[in-house]
Amino acid sequence: MPSVQTVYGGLTEWETEVLVRIARGLSGAEIMERLVGAEPMIRAQVSRVLVKAGLRGRTKAAVFAYEARLVRPNGR
Image 1: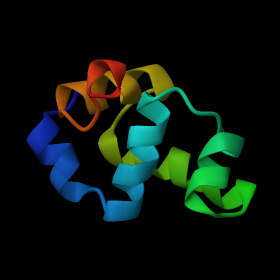
Image 2: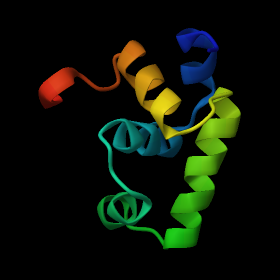
Image 3: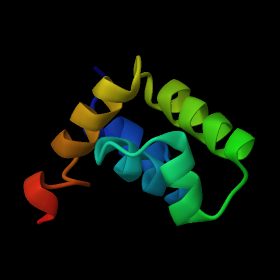
Image 4: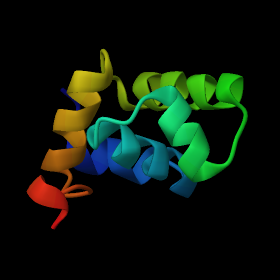
């Protein structure tokens, strides 16, 4: 997995918000509801975050977000 500093610094604010919601286990539709966007756009953003971060899948993205301390266990 790429280093947290390398990846996190390369994500936009919007991409970081998408990553946080992935880590919280939200589906594409749930991310769309919270960030106000069309579902195809959200799918594209999820894919972009994964590619930009060099991560394979939502699970790795969630692990990365916790390691980067973007998300804390139990929402704290």
